[in-house]
Length: 238
Image 1 (cartoon, rainbow, N blue to C red):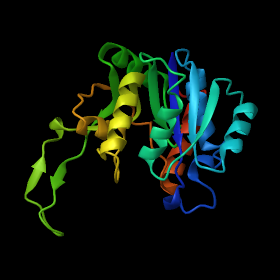
Image 2: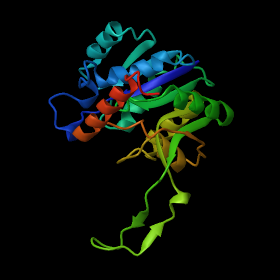
Image 3: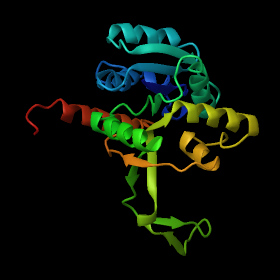
């Protein structure tokens, strides 16, 4: 079984809106619904679990009914941090998922996720036991010497950007979150599943990502997302 675990536990304070950004309407549809629809459409995904900001669970359930997200099976309360939220989702599957089931983690605020990205992710995960969407760095990266200067750079050929979606075998994911939270490894600050896995000694395997798979964090990101939707809906563009 392949289960998509959608992380929607953030409050979205940086956006400066009255409601969390994953619930903002863009062209008459909430952002989270675009994300859910991508996994609803993918033929390999069997079930969807949403880890939701507390108090918004019934809203997500209503969206599932309104937009025919029939794969939406579980809605779990989020935590104070993204790692707590993912842990809550993983632990909720303890008596549901089989050890060799694949869990696809994805941020609800990355709504422009393409089917080909999910498909390649699953191919890599089935082969290696995990997969992380990745992209090359196209800019030059410099280390900071002080507030005003630099004298050292990182060759961009040696680094990759890793984003969601990410995929892991459930047995490995459950082991990792139990160990990480018991021992305080890879769960603080900006940590995510991928960084936690590396801190636990795991090797990660790259699948390919997409520049369109933007993370909506600012008002400018909203405008970019709207533009992508307009282009996708324009029949005259080949």
